[in-house]
Image (cartoon, rainbow, N blue to C red; front, side, top):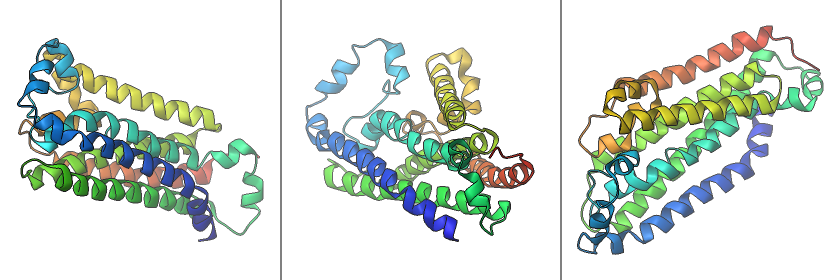
Length: 266
């Protein structure tokens, strides 16, 4: 497990920076929440003056600004559901390809390590930081919700929102892992992963704004786990979450099979 310890150590700094940044951004937003919630509906009234398409785009066409979960669904879809996804996507997309990209894979394979073990240890490192990242954000959000709420919030809805951004992060990690295993250059893996991220997010926005394209939301995790729909009373897609976890597990199986047969450039 020497490779696992090495990967955990090598990626620790970026984990701390990304986690601190997301938590700090959320704290800055929630620190202003009591004043927004207590303005007697002034903020909400001003929002309603905006075009309906714009309101639908950000999922604020039907939102209660006195409810801290609704407030999170509005701004969290950008920072936690989208922007925070850059970290697990970037981590996973670089995990397998970086040694081949940096021409250091020969030194690594000179050690007594099988390719299956190589893949498994790197996958484990990715999973550890993915879980730590989301757990830290979840605990921080729960603390901020309890500190800045102006009225009691629905704890079951809180967990639905939490599992939703977990699902998005897990799915994009699986996408990043596959690109990292298949690609030979780090730039190719990163580009493919972030293109997929942008594509899935764009599809979810189209499905949200245009009713005739509503069916597209089932093709993207951002649509299946849309926080704007959850705060309107939609059920959490448990089946979809299990499928995402299965996809993540299958990405490990695919990686082991593909990488053991891959002609690695030295």
